[in-house]
Image (cartoon, rainbow, N blue to C red):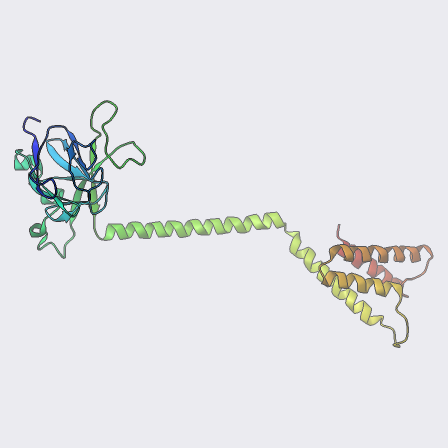
Length: 296
């Protein structure tokens, strides 16, 4: 740069100070490591950076609402082209006057949409879509808000990032919502299939078989109920009652124990060629229900 740009502090504690931007990359802030050090306690250690790239100057800030150009705040984490002359606001108390002797066409003053627009430039723009080009500084560092030189001593490349207002953003949001809904549907279907695989197809059928067998046992108790109140209960009916009572308490162990004892009584009567319930067909049906309720 044969004729560097200049910065003059026009407002704030450092008012009157003058700086020439001789380096390609200049940091501005309160810290001593900056090329432009400003004694303003309201400023951050690194408030802004100015870079010279492709014959033009651009400004960057890592902080929101920290830098304004001609009264318009610039977005954080993005490089914005500077016009040939501009009033730069830093925080609440400090203002700078930026000036360069570069031709207007080179410094970026020719196209107002390449730089922040002042109040006069924004008049009459309502009602139409506006495209703004912002120069974004591309680096490989993770979590670094302050721009650094590359390992080879050269500046990283500046790439223009276009922001369109209006329908494009809405279409992107709508597309994202559709993708999210589709993903949720796929996950829900996959979980349902997984539950079926884990539980197995026979779980529901087995539970229904248990309930049907227990219902039939209750009916068998009703059908064989003693005709007189004083008649004592027989052993097999007491065991059936114990099993049904355990099932009602979700006591699977107690239910199985009652079925085992009942099955032993049935087998003993078979060996004696007699019937436990007084009806051989009922004995056989009782064995079948016990086999169902005991499971494989």
